[in-house]
Amino acid sequence: MDFVIIGQGLAGTFLSYYLHKAGKNVLVIDEANPYSSSKVASGVINPVTGRRLVSTWMIDEIMPFAVTTYQQFEKELNTKLIRQCNVLDFHPTPQMQISFDERLKENTQYLQHPNNTEQWRKYFNYPLSVGEINPCYVIDLKTLLAQWRNVLKNNNQLIEEKIIVEEVVKKYNQSTIIFCDGINSVKNTYFNLLPFAPNKGEALIVEINNLPATNIFKQGIAIVPYTNNLFWVGSSYEWKYTNANPSALFKQKTEIQLNNWLKLPYKIIDHISAERPANIERRPFVGLHPIHKNIGILNGLGTKGCTLAPYFANEFAENLMNGKTINPLADIKRFTKILSK
Image (cartoon, rainbow, N blue to C red; front, side):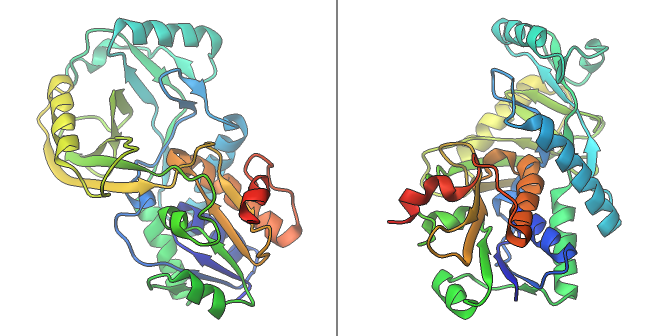
C-alpha cells in the first residue's frame, strides 16, 4: 500500500478520497462505530463562531473550497449531500440582540436581518427579533460516510477491525500510515503529546411535523434539518465528564428549552453523544511525525470538521504526493520539539 489511513470519519474519508482520485494505492482501516464524532455531528457549515459572532478562521478561503468539494462528491456518489440552510438566530436576551446588531455594522458579509421575522411566530415563541447568518450549509454526513464506505468496500480498500496502533505500524511499515481516528489519537503513543482538549457533545434526534426544513433555527440550542421530518437538536460542550454516554441531564435541559421555545409538538426518536477531538489551539493537526517519517496525522478538527476536513485533507494529500507546504498554523511541525521527546 502507498497509504494506510486509520479511521473513516470526515478526515479519513476526504484524505482517502483525494489519494484514491490521484491513483494512489490506499487502504482504510476502521472499526465500525455508529457513535463516532463525525457520525453524530450536525453536519453544519457556519461561517461565524461563538456568541461574539466573529468570522471563523480562514473562512473566506475554506468555505468555498468545502462547498465545491461536497458538490464534487455528490457527482462522484450520485446523491444529494449539501444544501444551503441559513441560520436564523432567535435572540434570547436584549443584550444578545444588541450584540448582533453591533456586529452587523462591522460584518455585512455573513450577518443580516431576515426579510420577514414575523413568519416564524406560528412555530416559535420569541420575545425579540431574529438575525440571520448567510450563507450556511447542511451536509448529509450519514449518507456521505456510508456511501464512501461502500466505495472502499467495493474496491477492497477497507478493513473493518479494531485498531491496535503498534500492530498496524509493524504490519504496514513500508507504507505511509496516517491516523485520522478522532478521539483515539489522544492515546496514540506517537501523538498523545499533542495538546488535545477533548470535549463531549450530545444531541437529540427529534420528529417535528410541519416545521419547515428550510433553515437552521437557533436559540441557545440549534434545531438542524436531518432527514424527512427529523431534526438534530443540540449540542452541548462538556469539558469535564466521566463517560461519553448520553446523559439524562442533557435530555432534561433540552426538553425544557424546546418546550419554552417550540410551539409545535415533537417526539424524541434518539439521544446520541460522542467525544470530539478538539484541541487547545483550535487549529488542526496536519502532517508527518518529525521523527517517524512514515507516520502522520489529520485530526483535531473539533466542532468545525465539516468546514475544515475537505480543505486540510486536500492540503495534506498534496503535501504527501507533491511536497506542497502545509499551512504552518495547521502543520504539526509547530510541535516538533514536543513530539521529538
